[in-house]
Image (cartoon, rainbow, N blue to C red; front, side, top):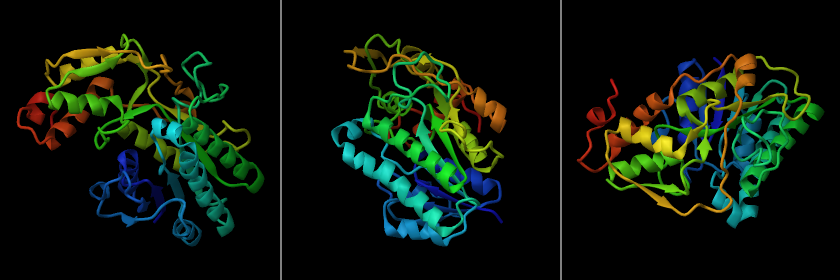
Length: 332
């Protein structure tokens, strides 16, 4: 039976990836320090190792266990935290990645185990290219978070070329869906769901015309598993085995608010706040490469994904004003 290790597998995206591997007949182990992941997100069929990706214990797990696939999702994901403490961000996002990939190299199984790294399709390319962003566009990230992700990608390209290791990269657009954390610097969909359920207006910065590429977490999990299992071209240049994962569709924040209020059957208002300095105005990725090389395409429309997401948040809300089924219109 094939085996997979999912780092960050108790988190938002990682738990969906782990469940998809289980559904496809893999034995699954999860590495997560539970700093943001939740134990209840771990499927009972998976084995949880509560440890940090930077630790010697994590390196031993990778070096001593013959996994067929390692999907590395554990990361520091808050851009604001990366700005406030770039060294801490790099310690996790670069140092943690190196800890695992070097352990895999030293094990001698680097050519047999596919190592999939989760990167960013929004913060990687910067504001100096015209979207939709294609994988081989020039990269000039404007945050320590984006810089760390790009640095880790360069390391993986080195390990692939010099040591012959089997690596791949998935560059996510704006992922949303069930289990997303609505607190801190979470995705806007999770934040909007929480505000609707609390009966509070949706906060839109600036004129709301800024766009993002919103992709449902179930589709992201499928793309990630395919990147870990599909036949891939030789890992020659940095972008050879990198895949944007999004929808290729731009949606403004104003349109997102309208759609979410519609699926929630909510009449909460929208409050406009001052534009945030430096905020990216347009972000959308090209997904043609994932389609041609992985045979992947997103299945969920934005309205369908928002319905499923709002239903999940509504079911767990401690208020009594919203009934999940009636409010979302989702059939289950």
